Length: 140
Image 1 (cartoon, one colour):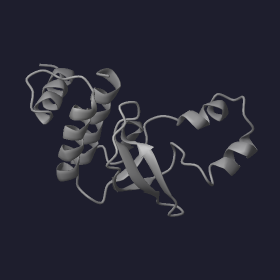
Image 2 (cartoon, one colour; image 1 turned 90 degrees about the vertical axis):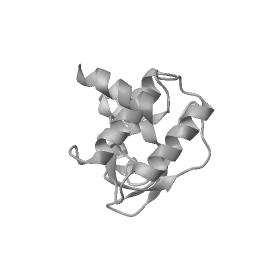
Image 3 (cartoon, helix red, strand yellow; image 1 turned 30 degrees about the vertical axis):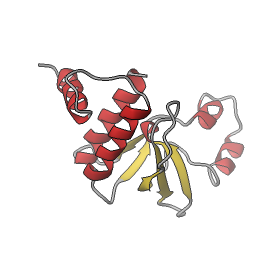
Image 4 (cartoon, one colour; image 1 turned 120 degrees about the vertical axis):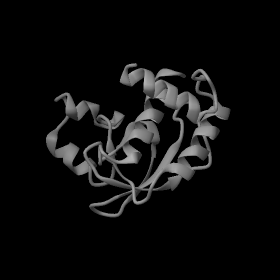
């Protein structure tokens, strides 16, 4: 059995199914309830990849100075965040929204959970969030 097969089985079990269901409001609420009771705190996160606002700077057609200035007020995929909790409002387009605090300056943001990953790859949280992101990205 491959690691991916095991991950898919774990996701289906998380949602109480034999097969992985599609992403919708009901399954997102089920996943949110599961994460609320299963994630361990403190939970430190970072971006999986650059956030949409950063693309022009990452791919080299935006000013480095402007990018550094914007990173002072906007969240960056390179930041370390502490997970504070979740919005109770679920959006099928964005999924579960995480309330986070940037560790460096304590600024708070609301970010799509599927865009984040746990920093500690050996933690239970890393696996939980990786499973969620795989499901959310591939089953909507």
